[in-house]
Length: 182
Image (cartoon, rainbow, N blue to C red; front, side, top):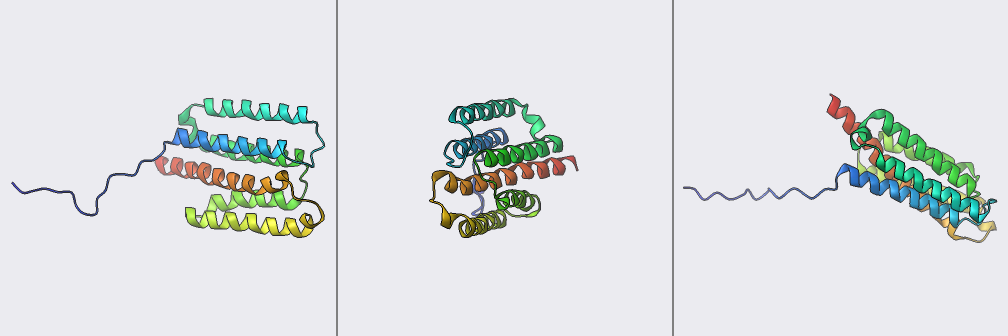
């Protein structure tokens, strides 16, 4: 009998979070970030009551999306509906918060393109941070010097990074669905 031991290079599989819990976590993070953006923006022309109603609407949307059957999350139609729906929500929240700079919306669109074409997570993260940093520099040069910084102004950047992470994960699910179909 030979003494069998595990090869030196083998290790136990790393623990991963399942698709359902990761998706739920990211969708919750998107809704929380958008809610904070709405409630802490100094430029909004809406009343606090109206903004609170929108936050409750975001919570209702989160509940509907989480209640969606798990097997549908990998279908291309649902994936692109989530990408476009969350982009639409994010753009509307930015608009309701009083941010009408076109650079913000261009940055949001660029984050979708980066998530759709970049093959590695490290490159995606570097490019996403670069897009957010470039937007921050342009925003500061055009607007930031002339108005005091507030929580709402600073929240734009984490919201963009949360959306970038969401896009990467969701569009990765599209790729997993296409690979499983082949």
